[in-house]
Length: 51
Image (cartoon, rainbow, N blue to C red; front, side, top):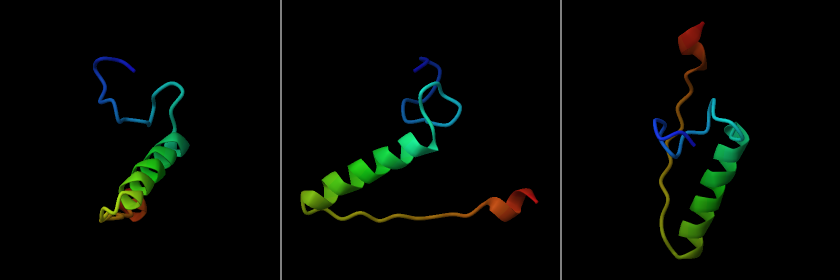
């Protein structure tokens, strides 16, 4: 990853995609829950914002 991009960015980065981002989130959430932790998530839908 380029030193100018945030390491967690997956969009528009070579060999990364929305699928790799989803897998990263799933893995992280699974680890937290396996260790007895709590995960809070917020989902936003911006699809109508660009009509």
